[in-house]
Amino acid sequence: MPRLHLAALAVFLAAIFITPVVIGDQFIYHVFITICLFAGLSTAWNIVGGFAGQLSLGHAIFYGIGAYAGIILMNHGISPWIGMFVGAAVAVLAAVVISYPCFRLKGPFFALATIAFLEVFRVLALHFRDFTGGATGLMIPLRFGWEWMVFRERLPALIIAFGMMLVALAAAWWIRSHRLGFYLVATRERESAAQAAGVSTVRVRLVAVSVSAALCAMIGTFHAMYLTFIEPAAVFSLTMSIQIAMFALIGGIGTVFGPLIGAVFLVPISELSRGWLGAHALGLHGFVYGVVLVLVVLFMPNGLMGALKRLTGKADPQRGVQAGAVAAAPRAAERPPIGGDILVAERLDKHFGGLHVTNDVSFSLKEGEILALIGPNGAGKTTVFNMLSGFLAADSGSVRVRDADGSFQTPVTPGDFAAIGVGRTFQIVQPFAAMTVEENIMVGAFHRFRDVGDAREAARETAHRMGLAPWLDAEARGLTIGGLKRLEVARVMAMQPRILLLDEVMAGINQTDVRRAIDLMLSIRDTGVSIIAIEHVMQAVMSLSDRVIVLNSGQIIAEGRPNDVVRDPTVIEAYLGKEFTHAHA
Image 1 (tube, rainbow, N blue to C red):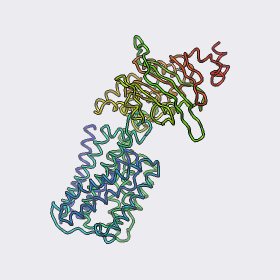
Image 2: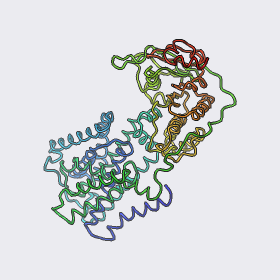
Image 3: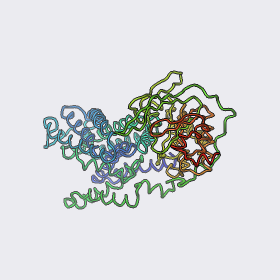
Image 4: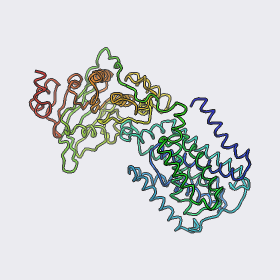
Protein backbone atom coordinates (compact mmCIF):
# COMPACT_ATOMS: atom_id res chain seq x y z
CA MET A 1 0.00 0.00 0.00
CA PRO A 2 1.46 3.43 -0.97
CA ARG A 3 2.59 5.66 1.90
CA LEU A 4 0.01 8.31 1.03
CA HIS A 5 -2.79 5.73 1.33
CA LEU A 6 -1.36 4.46 4.63
CA ALA A 7 -1.25 7.99 6.00
CA ALA A 8 -4.84 8.64 4.89
CA LEU A 9 -5.98 5.37 6.48
CA ALA A 10 -4.19 6.20 9.74
CA VAL A 11 -5.86 9.62 9.86
CA PHE A 12 -9.27 8.10 9.11
CA LEU A 13 -8.95 5.45 11.85
CA ALA A 14 -7.64 8.01 14.32
CA ALA A 15 -10.66 10.22 13.57
CA ILE A 16 -13.02 7.35 14.38
CA PHE A 17 -11.43 7.01 17.81
CA ILE A 18 -10.77 10.66 18.63
CA THR A 19 -14.09 12.20 17.50
CA PRO A 20 -16.26 10.82 20.36
CA VAL A 21 -13.50 11.52 22.88
CA VAL A 22 -13.31 15.17 21.81
CA ILE A 23 -17.10 15.62 21.71
CA GLY A 24 -17.57 13.80 25.00
CA ASP A 25 -21.28 13.10 24.50
CA GLN A 26 -22.48 9.67 25.69
CA PHE A 27 -24.73 9.16 22.67
CA ILE A 28 -21.89 10.00 20.26
CA TYR A 29 -19.76 7.49 22.14
CA HIS A 30 -22.49 4.90 21.57
CA VAL A 31 -22.65 5.70 17.84
CA PHE A 32 -18.91 5.25 17.38
CA ILE A 33 -18.78 2.09 19.50
CA THR A 34 -21.54 0.72 17.26
CA ILE A 35 -19.56 1.74 14.18
CA CYS A 36 -16.52 -0.17 15.42
CA LEU A 37 -18.57 -3.24 16.34
CA PHE A 38 -20.38 -3.50 13.03
CA ALA A 39 -17.28 -2.61 11.02
CA GLY A 40 -15.49 -5.51 12.75
CA LEU A 41 -18.39 -7.93 12.24
CA SER A 42 -18.81 -6.95 8.59
CA THR A 43 -15.07 -7.20 7.95
CA ALA A 44 -15.12 -10.71 9.41
CA TRP A 45 -18.13 -11.61 7.22
CA ASN A 46 -16.36 -10.16 4.18
CA ILE A 47 -13.58 -12.75 4.47
CA VAL A 48 -16.18 -15.39 3.55
CA GLY A 49 -18.81 -13.39 1.67
CA GLY A 50 -16.44 -11.08 -0.19
CA PHE A 51 -13.08 -12.80 -0.63
CA ALA A 52 -14.44 -16.35 -0.97
CA GLY A 53 -17.75 -15.36 -2.58
CA GLN A 54 -19.90 -17.44 -0.21
CA LEU A 55 -22.98 -15.32 0.58
CA SER A 56 -23.58 -16.36 4.16
CA LEU A 57 -26.76 -15.05 5.77
CA GLY A 58 -26.24 -17.04 8.94
CA HIS A 59 -23.20 -15.31 10.43
CA ALA A 60 -25.23 -14.32 13.48
CA ILE A 61 -24.70 -17.96 14.53
CA PHE A 62 -21.07 -17.20 15.39
CA TYR A 63 -21.89 -13.82 16.91
CA GLY A 64 -24.50 -15.50 19.11
CA ILE A 65 -22.17 -18.31 20.16
CA GLY A 66 -19.64 -15.72 21.34
CA ALA A 67 -22.31 -13.73 23.17
CA TYR A 68 -23.68 -16.75 25.02
CA ALA A 69 -20.23 -18.16 25.81
CA GLY A 70 -19.17 -14.88 27.40
CA ILE A 71 -22.26 -14.49 29.59
CA ILE A 72 -22.60 -18.17 30.59
CA LEU A 73 -18.97 -18.33 31.70
CA MET A 74 -19.21 -14.94 33.40
CA ASN A 75 -22.13 -16.27 35.43
CA HIS A 76 -19.74 -18.98 36.62
CA GLY A 77 -17.12 -16.44 37.67
CA ILE A 78 -14.95 -16.69 34.54
CA SER A 79 -13.79 -13.47 32.89
CA PRO A 80 -15.28 -12.72 29.45
CA TRP A 81 -11.71 -12.27 28.20
CA ILE A 82 -11.42 -16.04 28.59
CA GLY A 83 -15.02 -16.60 27.47
CA MET A 84 -14.19 -14.69 24.30
CA PHE A 85 -11.64 -17.32 23.23
CA VAL A 86 -13.84 -20.21 24.38
CA GLY A 87 -16.66 -18.80 22.25
CA ALA A 88 -14.27 -18.37 19.32
CA ALA A 89 -13.18 -22.02 19.57
CA VAL A 90 -16.79 -23.25 19.68
CA ALA A 91 -17.68 -20.95 16.78
CA VAL A 92 -14.82 -22.35 14.68
CA LEU A 93 -16.00 -25.89 15.35
CA ALA A 94 -19.57 -24.95 14.44
CA ALA A 95 -18.38 -23.13 11.30
CA VAL A 96 -16.48 -26.17 10.02
CA VAL A 97 -19.34 -28.59 10.75
CA ILE A 98 -21.91 -26.30 9.10
CA SER A 99 -19.84 -25.08 6.17
CA TYR A 100 -18.27 -28.32 4.96
CA PRO A 101 -21.54 -29.76 3.60
CA CYS A 102 -22.91 -26.32 2.66
CA PHE A 103 -19.92 -25.54 0.42
CA ARG A 104 -21.25 -28.19 -1.97
CA LEU A 105 -24.24 -25.94 -2.61
CA LYS A 106 -24.10 -23.28 -5.29
CA GLY A 107 -25.67 -19.86 -5.75
CA PRO A 108 -28.66 -18.97 -3.54
CA PHE A 109 -28.83 -22.49 -2.06
CA PHE A 110 -25.78 -21.81 0.11
CA ALA A 111 -27.39 -18.63 1.48
CA LEU A 112 -30.65 -20.48 2.16
CA ALA A 113 -28.80 -23.27 3.97
CA THR A 114 -27.05 -20.78 6.26
CA ILE A 115 -30.42 -19.19 7.09
CA ALA A 116 -31.78 -22.65 7.97
CA PHE A 117 -28.85 -23.34 10.32
CA LEU A 118 -29.35 -19.93 11.93
CA GLU A 119 -32.95 -20.86 12.72
CA VAL A 120 -31.76 -24.19 14.14
CA PHE A 121 -29.46 -22.39 16.57
CA ARG A 122 -32.23 -20.00 17.60
CA VAL A 123 -34.53 -22.92 18.38
CA LEU A 124 -31.76 -24.72 20.29
CA ALA A 125 -31.17 -21.59 22.37
CA LEU A 126 -34.86 -21.48 23.20
CA HIS A 127 -34.92 -25.17 24.08
CA PHE A 128 -31.87 -25.39 26.37
CA ARG A 129 -33.17 -22.79 28.77
CA ASP A 130 -31.02 -24.07 31.66
CA PHE A 131 -27.97 -22.74 29.82
CA THR A 132 -29.38 -19.91 27.71
CA GLY A 133 -32.32 -18.69 29.76
CA GLY A 134 -34.66 -19.65 26.92
CA ALA A 135 -36.95 -16.92 25.63
CA THR A 136 -36.35 -14.94 28.83
CA GLY A 137 -32.70 -14.46 27.91
CA LEU A 138 -29.66 -13.83 30.10
CA MET A 139 -28.55 -10.73 31.94
CA ILE A 140 -24.94 -10.26 33.01
CA PRO A 141 -24.04 -9.72 36.67
CA LEU A 142 -22.93 -6.12 37.03
CA ARG A 143 -19.26 -6.57 37.88
CA PHE A 144 -17.44 -3.46 36.76
CA GLY A 145 -13.87 -3.26 35.58
CA TRP A 146 -11.56 -4.35 32.79
CA GLU A 147 -11.60 -7.94 34.01
CA TRP A 148 -15.33 -8.15 33.29
CA MET A 149 -15.53 -5.85 30.22
CA VAL A 150 -18.26 -3.81 31.96
CA PHE A 151 -17.73 -0.09 32.59
CA ARG A 152 -19.58 2.90 33.93
CA GLU A 153 -17.81 5.14 31.39
CA ARG A 154 -17.96 4.79 27.61
CA LEU A 155 -14.27 5.33 26.83
CA PRO A 156 -13.05 1.83 27.89
CA ALA A 157 -15.81 0.25 25.79
CA LEU A 158 -14.71 2.38 22.82
CA ILE A 159 -11.10 1.26 23.32
CA ILE A 160 -12.10 -2.42 23.26
CA ALA A 161 -14.48 -2.03 20.29
CA PHE A 162 -11.89 -0.04 18.35
CA GLY A 163 -9.20 -2.62 19.13
CA MET A 164 -11.41 -5.48 17.96
CA MET A 165 -12.17 -3.62 14.75
CA LEU A 166 -8.44 -3.17 14.16
CA VAL A 167 -7.85 -6.89 14.74
CA ALA A 168 -10.55 -7.77 12.18
CA LEU A 169 -9.15 -5.28 9.66
CA ALA A 170 -5.61 -6.58 10.19
CA ALA A 171 -6.77 -10.17 9.70
CA ALA A 172 -8.62 -9.26 6.50
CA TRP A 173 -5.65 -7.28 5.16
CA TRP A 174 -3.21 -10.09 5.95
CA ILE A 175 -5.40 -12.71 4.28
CA ARG A 176 -5.99 -10.62 1.15
CA SER A 177 -2.32 -9.77 0.71
CA HIS A 178 -1.04 -13.35 1.14
CA ARG A 179 -1.45 -16.58 -0.78
CA LEU A 180 -4.68 -17.49 1.03
CA GLY A 181 -6.34 -14.30 -0.20
CA PHE A 182 -5.33 -14.91 -3.81
CA TYR A 183 -6.66 -18.45 -3.55
CA LEU A 184 -9.96 -17.28 -2.06
CA VAL A 185 -10.56 -14.71 -4.80
CA ALA A 186 -9.56 -17.24 -7.47
CA THR A 187 -12.02 -19.74 -5.98
CA ARG A 188 -14.74 -17.09 -5.98
CA GLU A 189 -14.09 -16.11 -9.59
CA ARG A 190 -13.57 -19.54 -11.24
CA GLU A 191 -13.57 -22.55 -8.98
CA SER A 192 -12.61 -25.07 -11.69
CA ALA A 193 -9.71 -22.90 -12.88
CA ALA A 194 -8.53 -22.55 -9.27
CA GLN A 195 -8.64 -26.33 -8.84
CA ALA A 196 -6.62 -26.75 -12.03
CA ALA A 197 -4.01 -24.42 -10.49
CA GLY A 198 -3.70 -26.77 -7.53
CA VAL A 199 -5.94 -24.85 -5.13
CA SER A 200 -7.78 -26.98 -2.56
CA THR A 201 -10.93 -24.87 -2.83
CA VAL A 202 -12.83 -26.50 0.04
CA ARG A 203 -9.84 -26.26 2.39
CA VAL A 204 -9.19 -22.55 1.76
CA ARG A 205 -12.88 -21.78 2.23
CA LEU A 206 -12.89 -23.67 5.52
CA VAL A 207 -9.87 -21.66 6.69
CA ALA A 208 -11.67 -18.45 5.71
CA VAL A 209 -14.91 -19.35 7.48
CA SER A 210 -12.96 -20.44 10.58
CA VAL A 211 -11.17 -17.08 10.85
CA SER A 212 -14.43 -15.25 10.14
CA ALA A 213 -16.35 -17.22 12.77
CA ALA A 214 -13.68 -16.70 15.42
CA LEU A 215 -13.66 -12.92 14.87
CA CYS A 216 -17.48 -12.72 14.94
CA ALA A 217 -17.62 -14.72 18.17
CA MET A 218 -15.03 -12.54 19.89
CA ILE A 219 -16.88 -9.37 18.93
CA GLY A 220 -20.14 -11.05 19.99
CA THR A 221 -18.73 -11.64 23.48
CA PHE A 222 -17.87 -7.99 23.95
CA HIS A 223 -21.16 -6.80 22.47
CA ALA A 224 -23.04 -8.95 24.98
CA MET A 225 -21.08 -7.30 27.81
CA TYR A 226 -21.82 -3.89 26.31
CA LEU A 227 -25.56 -4.58 26.00
CA THR A 228 -25.68 -6.38 29.42
CA PHE A 229 -28.55 -8.56 28.18
CA ILE A 230 -29.10 -11.05 25.36
CA GLU A 231 -31.90 -13.34 24.19
CA PRO A 232 -32.17 -15.83 21.29
CA ALA A 233 -34.40 -13.75 19.02
CA ALA A 234 -31.86 -10.90 19.12
CA VAL A 235 -28.51 -12.67 18.80
CA PHE A 236 -29.52 -15.54 16.46
CA SER A 237 -31.35 -13.09 14.27
CA LEU A 238 -31.64 -13.07 10.48
CA THR A 239 -31.89 -9.29 10.71
CA MET A 240 -28.49 -9.20 12.42
CA SER A 241 -26.97 -11.45 9.74
CA ILE A 242 -28.34 -9.29 6.93
CA GLN A 243 -27.17 -6.16 8.69
CA ILE A 244 -23.63 -7.55 9.00
CA ALA A 245 -23.55 -8.35 5.28
CA MET A 246 -25.19 -5.05 4.31
CA PHE A 247 -22.26 -2.89 5.42
CA ALA A 248 -19.87 -4.86 3.18
CA LEU A 249 -22.28 -4.81 0.24
CA ILE A 250 -22.72 -1.05 0.47
CA GLY A 251 -19.12 -0.22 1.35
CA GLY A 252 -17.55 -2.51 -1.25
CA ILE A 253 -17.77 -6.28 -1.04
CA GLY A 254 -14.48 -8.09 -1.47
CA THR A 255 -12.38 -5.06 -0.50
CA VAL A 256 -10.46 -4.87 2.77
CA PHE A 257 -11.83 -1.52 3.91
CA GLY A 258 -15.23 -1.54 2.22
CA PRO A 259 -17.08 -2.85 5.33
CA LEU A 260 -15.50 -0.10 7.43
CA ILE A 261 -16.60 2.58 4.93
CA GLY A 262 -20.08 1.07 4.87
CA ALA A 263 -20.36 1.12 8.68
CA VAL A 264 -19.05 4.67 8.96
CA PHE A 265 -21.59 5.79 6.36
CA LEU A 266 -24.65 3.88 7.54
CA VAL A 267 -24.48 3.54 11.32
CA PRO A 268 -24.61 7.29 12.08
CA ILE A 269 -27.58 7.76 9.71
CA SER A 270 -29.48 4.93 11.39
CA GLU A 271 -28.55 5.73 15.00
CA LEU A 272 -29.08 9.47 14.67
CA SER A 273 -32.46 8.90 13.04
CA ARG A 274 -33.51 6.64 15.90
CA GLY A 275 -32.14 9.10 18.45
CA TRP A 276 -34.04 12.03 16.98
CA LEU A 277 -37.33 10.22 16.32
CA GLY A 278 -37.32 7.91 19.36
CA ALA A 279 -40.15 5.35 19.46
CA HIS A 280 -41.50 6.66 16.16
CA ALA A 281 -38.38 5.26 14.41
CA LEU A 282 -38.83 1.57 15.26
CA GLY A 283 -37.54 -0.41 12.30
CA LEU A 284 -36.30 2.75 10.59
CA HIS A 285 -32.74 1.41 10.33
CA GLY A 286 -33.99 -1.38 8.06
CA PHE A 287 -35.70 1.14 5.82
CA VAL A 288 -32.54 3.27 5.71
CA TYR A 289 -30.35 0.29 4.82
CA GLY A 290 -32.78 -0.79 2.11
CA VAL A 291 -32.92 2.64 0.48
CA VAL A 292 -29.15 3.04 0.57
CA LEU A 293 -28.61 -0.46 -0.83
CA VAL A 294 -30.96 0.22 -3.77
CA LEU A 295 -29.17 3.50 -4.52
CA VAL A 296 -25.74 1.87 -4.30
CA VAL A 297 -26.74 -1.02 -6.58
CA LEU A 298 -28.17 1.41 -9.13
CA PHE A 299 -25.45 4.05 -9.13
CA MET A 300 -22.38 2.49 -7.47
CA PRO A 301 -22.39 -1.27 -8.25
CA ASN A 302 -18.88 -1.62 -6.79
CA GLY A 303 -19.93 0.06 -3.56
CA LEU A 304 -18.61 3.19 -1.93
CA MET A 305 -15.02 1.95 -2.30
CA GLY A 306 -15.54 1.62 -6.06
CA ALA A 307 -16.80 5.20 -6.23
CA LEU A 308 -13.85 6.35 -4.13
CA LYS A 309 -11.40 4.63 -6.47
CA ARG A 310 -13.02 6.26 -9.49
CA LEU A 311 -12.67 9.66 -7.84
CA THR A 312 -8.97 9.04 -7.22
CA GLY A 313 -8.52 7.66 -10.74
CA LYS A 314 -7.40 4.22 -9.57
CA ALA A 315 -10.25 2.02 -10.79
CA ASP A 316 -10.22 -0.38 -13.71
CA PRO A 317 -6.72 0.16 -15.08
CA GLN A 318 -6.25 -0.30 -18.84
CA ARG A 319 -9.71 -1.62 -19.61
CA GLY A 320 -10.18 -3.07 -23.08
CA VAL A 321 -6.48 -3.58 -23.80
CA GLN A 322 -5.43 -5.58 -26.81
CA ALA A 323 -3.15 -8.25 -25.38
CA GLY A 324 -1.72 -10.84 -27.65
CA ALA A 325 -0.33 -8.83 -30.56
CA VAL A 326 3.31 -9.33 -29.60
CA ALA A 327 6.16 -11.53 -30.65
CA ALA A 328 6.28 -15.01 -29.22
CA ALA A 329 8.96 -16.09 -26.79
CA PRO A 330 12.30 -16.93 -28.44
CA ARG A 331 12.68 -20.52 -29.59
CA ALA A 332 15.31 -22.81 -28.13
CA ALA A 333 18.31 -23.44 -30.35
CA GLU A 334 17.60 -27.16 -30.40
CA ARG A 335 14.50 -29.15 -29.56
CA PRO A 336 14.99 -31.79 -26.82
CA PRO A 337 14.57 -35.35 -28.10
CA ILE A 338 11.26 -37.14 -27.55
CA GLY A 339 11.54 -39.50 -24.59
CA GLY A 340 9.52 -42.32 -23.10
CA ASP A 341 5.90 -42.36 -21.97
CA ILE A 342 5.01 -39.65 -19.45
CA LEU A 343 1.21 -40.14 -19.41
CA VAL A 344 -0.71 -43.33 -20.13
CA ALA A 345 -4.50 -43.50 -20.50
CA GLU A 346 -5.86 -47.03 -20.46
CA ARG A 347 -9.35 -48.15 -21.53
CA LEU A 348 -11.17 -44.97 -20.42
CA ASP A 349 -14.94 -45.38 -20.37
CA LYS A 350 -17.46 -42.72 -19.35
CA HIS A 351 -21.26 -42.75 -19.39
CA PHE A 352 -23.66 -39.87 -18.77
CA GLY A 353 -26.93 -41.68 -18.17
CA GLY A 354 -27.56 -43.80 -21.25
CA LEU A 355 -25.00 -41.90 -23.36
CA HIS A 356 -21.67 -43.66 -23.86
CA VAL A 357 -19.35 -40.64 -24.16
CA THR A 358 -15.99 -42.44 -24.31
CA ASN A 359 -15.53 -46.08 -25.18
CA ASP A 360 -12.25 -47.91 -24.45
CA VAL A 361 -10.00 -44.89 -25.11
CA SER A 362 -6.34 -45.81 -24.71
CA PHE A 363 -3.24 -43.84 -25.71
CA SER A 364 0.03 -42.52 -24.34
CA LEU A 365 1.91 -39.22 -24.38
CA LYS A 366 5.68 -39.19 -24.67
CA GLU A 367 8.05 -36.77 -22.98
CA GLY A 368 8.65 -33.69 -25.15
CA GLU A 369 5.90 -34.65 -27.62
CA ILE A 370 2.97 -32.62 -28.94
CA LEU A 371 -0.07 -34.87 -29.34
CA ALA A 372 -3.14 -33.45 -31.10
CA LEU A 373 -6.60 -34.73 -30.20
CA ILE A 374 -9.08 -33.95 -32.99
CA GLY A 375 -12.59 -34.99 -33.93
CA PRO A 376 -16.06 -33.58 -34.60
CA ASN A 377 -18.03 -31.73 -31.94
CA GLY A 378 -19.49 -34.18 -29.43
CA ALA A 379 -16.78 -36.77 -30.08
CA GLY A 380 -15.79 -36.85 -26.38
CA LYS A 381 -12.55 -34.84 -26.55
CA THR A 382 -13.23 -32.52 -23.59
CA THR A 383 -14.56 -35.47 -21.56
CA VAL A 384 -11.20 -37.20 -22.14
CA PHE A 385 -9.42 -34.00 -21.01
CA ASN A 386 -11.52 -33.87 -17.86
CA MET A 387 -10.52 -37.43 -17.05
CA LEU A 388 -6.86 -36.63 -17.79
CA SER A 389 -6.94 -33.76 -15.27
CA GLY A 390 -9.13 -35.15 -12.47
CA PHE A 391 -12.29 -33.16 -13.15
CA LEU A 392 -14.17 -36.34 -14.10
CA ALA A 393 -13.70 -39.83 -12.73
CA ALA A 394 -13.73 -42.56 -15.37
CA ASP A 395 -16.36 -45.26 -14.98
CA SER A 396 -13.57 -47.71 -15.81
CA GLY A 397 -9.99 -47.45 -16.92
CA SER A 398 -7.13 -45.42 -15.48
CA VAL A 399 -4.79 -42.50 -16.08
CA ARG A 400 -1.18 -42.93 -14.99
CA VAL A 401 1.36 -40.10 -14.91
CA ARG A 402 5.13 -40.48 -14.54
CA ASP A 403 6.42 -38.62 -11.53
CA ALA A 404 9.69 -36.67 -11.47
CA ASP A 405 11.38 -39.69 -9.85
CA GLY A 406 10.39 -41.91 -12.78
CA SER A 407 7.64 -43.89 -11.04
CA PHE A 408 4.08 -43.90 -12.40
CA GLN A 409 1.33 -42.50 -10.17
CA THR A 410 -2.45 -42.63 -10.48
CA PRO A 411 -3.73 -39.19 -9.44
CA VAL A 412 -7.42 -38.74 -8.68
CA THR A 413 -8.38 -35.13 -7.97
CA PRO A 414 -7.45 -31.98 -9.91
CA GLY A 415 -5.10 -31.13 -7.06
CA ASP A 416 -3.37 -34.50 -7.42
CA PHE A 417 -2.86 -33.93 -11.14
CA ALA A 418 -1.54 -30.41 -10.54
CA ALA A 419 0.85 -31.69 -7.86
CA ILE A 420 2.31 -34.28 -10.21
CA GLY A 421 2.85 -31.70 -12.97
CA VAL A 422 -0.29 -31.73 -15.14
CA GLY A 423 -1.65 -28.30 -16.07
CA ARG A 424 -4.64 -27.53 -18.24
CA THR A 425 -6.59 -24.78 -19.96
CA PHE A 426 -10.34 -24.78 -20.62
CA GLN A 427 -12.43 -24.79 -23.78
CA ILE A 428 -14.33 -21.73 -22.50
CA VAL A 429 -11.60 -19.47 -21.19
CA GLN A 430 -11.72 -19.08 -17.38
CA PRO A 431 -9.86 -15.99 -16.19
CA PHE A 432 -10.11 -14.63 -12.67
CA ALA A 433 -11.88 -11.57 -14.05
CA ALA A 434 -11.64 -9.29 -10.99
CA MET A 435 -7.90 -9.86 -10.65
CA THR A 436 -5.15 -8.22 -12.67
CA VAL A 437 -3.11 -10.09 -15.27
CA GLU A 438 -0.25 -10.28 -12.77
CA GLU A 439 -2.49 -11.66 -10.02
CA ASN A 440 -3.96 -14.26 -12.39
CA ILE A 441 -0.51 -15.59 -13.17
CA MET A 442 0.48 -15.41 -9.49
CA VAL A 443 -2.28 -17.91 -8.66
CA GLY A 444 -0.41 -20.40 -10.83
CA ALA A 445 2.98 -19.36 -9.40
CA PHE A 446 1.75 -19.97 -5.84
CA HIS A 447 1.78 -23.67 -6.76
CA ARG A 448 5.57 -23.42 -6.45
CA PHE A 449 6.04 -20.48 -4.07
CA ARG A 450 4.45 -19.61 -0.74
CA ASP A 451 5.93 -16.13 -0.54
CA VAL A 452 4.03 -13.38 -2.34
CA GLY A 453 7.22 -11.67 -3.50
CA ASP A 454 8.59 -14.86 -5.07
CA ALA A 455 5.25 -15.60 -6.75
CA ARG A 456 5.06 -12.04 -8.10
CA GLU A 457 8.56 -12.26 -9.54
CA ALA A 458 7.77 -15.63 -11.16
CA ALA A 459 4.52 -14.21 -12.56
CA ARG A 460 6.30 -11.26 -14.13
CA GLU A 461 8.92 -13.52 -15.66
CA THR A 462 6.19 -15.78 -17.08
CA ALA A 463 4.22 -12.78 -18.37
CA HIS A 464 7.33 -11.58 -20.22
CA ARG A 465 7.81 -14.98 -21.86
CA MET A 466 4.13 -15.18 -22.78
CA GLY A 467 4.03 -11.66 -24.23
CA LEU A 468 1.82 -10.21 -21.48
CA ALA A 469 4.32 -7.96 -19.69
CA PRO A 470 2.76 -4.64 -20.90
CA TRP A 471 -0.60 -5.57 -19.34
CA LEU A 472 0.43 -6.77 -15.88
CA ASP A 473 -1.70 -4.13 -14.11
CA ALA A 474 -4.73 -4.52 -16.38
CA GLU A 475 -7.78 -6.35 -15.07
CA ALA A 476 -8.26 -9.68 -16.83
CA ARG A 477 -11.83 -8.77 -17.80
CA GLY A 478 -10.45 -6.06 -20.06
CA LEU A 479 -8.42 -8.36 -22.31
CA THR A 480 -9.47 -9.51 -25.76
CA ILE A 481 -10.26 -13.20 -26.36
CA GLY A 482 -6.75 -13.73 -27.71
CA GLY A 483 -5.26 -12.07 -24.65
CA LEU A 484 -7.42 -14.16 -22.32
CA LYS A 485 -6.30 -17.39 -23.96
CA ARG A 486 -2.67 -16.32 -23.69
CA LEU A 487 -3.27 -15.38 -20.05
CA GLU A 488 -4.70 -18.82 -19.28
CA VAL A 489 -1.66 -20.49 -20.80
CA ALA A 490 0.58 -18.14 -18.80
CA ARG A 491 -1.22 -19.02 -15.55
CA VAL A 492 -0.63 -22.72 -16.20
CA MET A 493 2.99 -22.21 -17.26
CA ALA A 494 3.68 -20.34 -14.00
CA MET A 495 3.08 -23.70 -12.30
CA GLN A 496 5.98 -25.15 -14.34
CA PRO A 497 4.01 -28.20 -15.50
CA ARG A 498 5.64 -31.18 -17.17
CA ILE A 499 2.41 -31.92 -19.08
CA LEU A 500 0.23 -29.21 -20.63
CA LEU A 501 -3.35 -29.92 -21.73
CA LEU A 502 -4.58 -27.27 -24.17
CA ASP A 503 -8.32 -27.21 -24.89
CA GLU A 504 -8.95 -25.26 -28.12
CA VAL A 505 -6.65 -22.35 -27.28
CA MET A 506 -6.79 -21.14 -30.88
CA ALA A 507 -10.56 -21.11 -31.28
CA GLY A 508 -12.01 -17.68 -31.99
CA ILE A 509 -8.73 -15.85 -32.71
CA ASN A 510 -7.59 -14.37 -36.01
CA GLN A 511 -5.00 -15.87 -38.35
CA THR A 512 -2.22 -13.58 -37.16
CA ASP A 513 -2.78 -14.63 -33.56
CA VAL A 514 -3.00 -18.28 -34.64
CA ARG A 515 0.51 -18.02 -36.07
CA ARG A 516 1.78 -16.39 -32.88
CA ALA A 517 0.04 -19.03 -30.79
CA ILE A 518 1.70 -21.79 -32.82
CA ASP A 519 5.11 -20.21 -32.20
CA LEU A 520 4.30 -19.91 -28.51
CA MET A 521 3.31 -23.60 -28.27
CA LEU A 522 6.51 -24.62 -30.03
CA SER A 523 8.59 -22.51 -27.65
CA ILE A 524 6.86 -24.20 -24.70
CA ARG A 525 7.53 -27.62 -26.22
CA ASP A 526 11.19 -26.70 -26.65
CA THR A 527 11.48 -26.28 -22.86
CA GLY A 528 10.70 -29.99 -22.50
CA VAL A 529 6.98 -29.70 -21.69
CA SER A 530 4.80 -32.45 -23.18
CA ILE A 531 1.56 -31.17 -24.75
CA ILE A 532 -1.82 -32.67 -25.56
CA ALA A 533 -3.90 -30.23 -27.60
CA ILE A 534 -7.57 -30.41 -28.56
CA GLU A 535 -7.78 -28.33 -31.69
CA HIS A 536 -10.05 -27.68 -34.67
CA VAL A 537 -7.67 -25.31 -36.45
CA MET A 538 -6.02 -27.73 -38.88
CA GLN A 539 -3.25 -25.24 -39.68
CA ALA A 540 -2.18 -25.54 -36.04
CA VAL A 541 -2.63 -29.33 -35.96
CA MET A 542 -0.42 -29.81 -39.02
CA SER A 543 2.24 -27.32 -37.82
CA LEU A 544 2.45 -28.40 -34.19
CA SER A 545 1.74 -32.08 -33.90
CA ASP A 546 4.17 -34.94 -33.71
CA ARG A 547 1.24 -37.32 -33.55
CA VAL A 548 -2.54 -37.04 -34.01
CA ILE A 549 -5.36 -39.03 -32.42
CA VAL A 550 -8.84 -38.81 -33.97
CA LEU A 551 -11.91 -39.38 -31.80
CA ASN A 552 -15.38 -40.01 -33.16
CA SER A 553 -18.41 -41.01 -31.08
CA GLY A 554 -16.16 -41.61 -28.10
CA GLN A 555 -13.81 -44.02 -29.89
CA ILE A 556 -10.35 -43.63 -31.38
CA ILE A 557 -10.71 -44.14 -35.13
CA ALA A 558 -7.18 -43.19 -36.21
CA GLU A 559 -3.75 -42.45 -34.77
CA GLY A 560 -0.44 -41.56 -36.39
CA ARG A 561 1.60 -38.79 -37.99
CA PRO A 562 -0.41 -35.72 -39.09
CA ASN A 563 0.11 -36.24 -42.83
CA ASP A 564 -0.93 -39.87 -42.60
CA VAL A 565 -4.02 -39.22 -40.47
CA VAL A 566 -5.46 -36.50 -42.70
CA ARG A 567 -5.33 -38.90 -45.66
CA ASP A 568 -7.15 -41.68 -43.79
CA PRO A 569 -10.53 -42.26 -45.54
CA THR A 570 -12.23 -42.93 -42.19
CA VAL A 571 -11.02 -39.61 -40.80
CA ILE A 572 -12.03 -37.74 -43.94
CA GLU A 573 -15.53 -39.18 -43.81
CA ALA A 574 -16.01 -38.62 -40.07
CA TYR A 575 -14.37 -35.25 -39.60
CA LEU A 576 -12.34 -33.50 -42.29
CA GLY A 577 -14.60 -33.82 -45.34
CA LYS A 578 -13.62 -34.23 -48.97
CA GLU A 579 -12.91 -30.50 -49.31
CA PHE A 580 -9.88 -30.89 -47.02
CA THR A 581 -8.45 -33.66 -49.22
CA HIS A 582 -8.94 -31.58 -52.37
CA ALA A 583 -7.36 -28.55 -50.73
CA HIS A 584 -4.22 -30.54 -49.86
CA ALA A 585 -4.03 -32.64 -53.01
